Length: 213
Image (cartoon, rainbow, N blue to C red; front, top):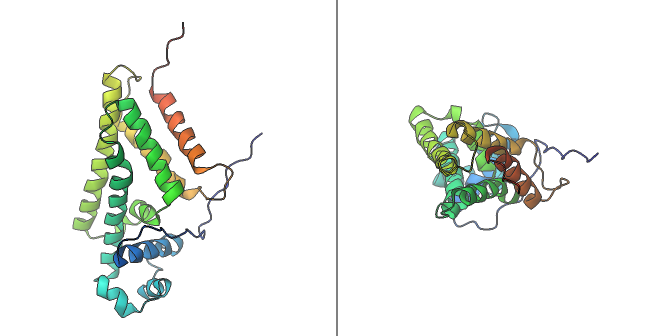
């Protein structure tokens, strides 16, 4: 029997990204890692400043408040979703291949880049003011619609079993978005193996069997 995947510790550290372009992005990612480890309420601006090697005054030069910081992290997280998933596959004409590429890219966003701000998007939105929540939720709905449209196209092409496309898209997101609770870089499977396995698992459930001769 194969060994189960290793689960991710709540205190597991994530290597910093190497493609930072702005000081603000560095702050977002450092703060997001702290919030994921300690929770929003238990993470102070002093903690964030210490993690960045900055003073609180230096942090406030870039950020208006702790709540403003959380909102910016979430919007930055959605920027990454759009840049690294949707924008890379949106021009693929075949809906099955577009969906396949989107699932794989989405998984690799967790396993390869592992941006902690994505986890914050999923878990800390209740802290935001209502108008900020709506802006984040609107972008999440846009991404859901993108997946739903791809699934609809697969169904219309006669390649998928009859299923509610929104339900299928939500099930897909639920499967991938839970990864932050168990994935760890030193686990048994490589990131590409996990991406291919999850992609195949979902598509085998969605697509009609290929007729055999």
